[in-house]
Every structure is written in structure tokens, then in C-alpha cells.
Length: 204
Image (cartoon, one colour):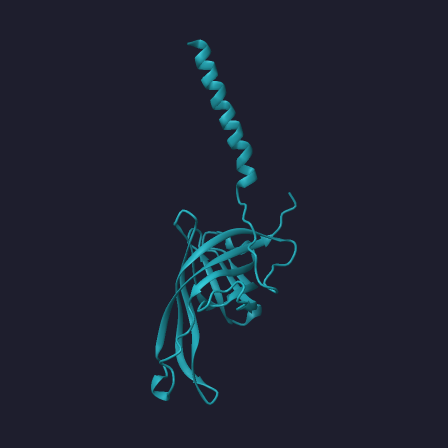
């Protein structure tokens, strides 16, 4: 019995040691996605978080040139982690960074600590080798501003870039915005996407 006890204890210690060794190797590890030309992130940055978005791209019919067209006024999306738990919300809001003069930016707010990242579009792509038919463009956004949460939360304040990839749906309707009678009409178009968050690579 004594031999059996020590054998079991040794196995438990070995499993615990293996878990402790594996955790640093796999914790906080995200593989950069393959993306169209121009959507790659600058060297010196690495992905640290992925959110799977479910929501709508919201459009309003407005005059455009000599005619009328739908214009995006905000996305509304919830980002989930791989376990299906909400981690972030996504929408448009004024950037709090004074240097940006209150411009409306794509915004992501952490559901846990309320920190925010404000993004500015660097490039969009509808490359058919990556982007599905009828899907909104893939995007690369750079940091236009960040904001800590009310209690100092900072998970998203470390973000330097965001990629929108693996999109489905979300394209503005092709009908319903053709005359002055349609001005002000809104369309809420379902979409899904993955958002990949990057931060400056650590030296360790």
C-alpha cells in the first residue's frame, strides 16, 4: 500500500509539473491570421486576444452625390471568447484622446474592466481570395486612442492594432434607399467576424 501511495503521489507531482511547464508556453498565445496584402500588422507587435463577434452593421439612408445611398452609422456587436463568454462590446463613439478632436471611431470596450480601444482604419480589403461573397470587408485598424476603465482596468489600453477577419454578412442592402422618401430609413444587417487584438511585443 505504501508503494502504491508513493507511486500515485509521484504521478500527481509529475502531472502538476507538466501543467506548470505547459501553461506559460500556451497562455496568452494567439496565432496571427493569414490576411490580404496591406492588412498585416507592423513588426514588433503580436496578437494577444481574439473575439468572435456577433451583431449588426447599422446603416441609414442619406443623400449621396446626385442620388442616395446607405451609410454606416455604427456597428453593434458582442465579442465572445472560445468558451462562448462575452469579453468585449463593439460600437462607434467619440474618441476621448484630445489630439483626435472628438472624431467618431470604431470602439471596443472590455466587458470585464471597461477599458477601451479606439481604432482608425488603415486599410480595407475585399480580396475574393479571403473575403466571402456578400461579406463586409476585412480591416486593419491602428490605435487612435485608448481609455482605462473607471477602476484603472487596462486590458485594451495596451492594444496597438486590430484586424477584422473571417467576416460574414453585414453588407448594406441593395434596395430601400433610392429616393428622398427613403432618407432616414435604417437597416440593421446581421454579421459575424473575428477581431484580432495586437500589442507591442514584450522582450521576455
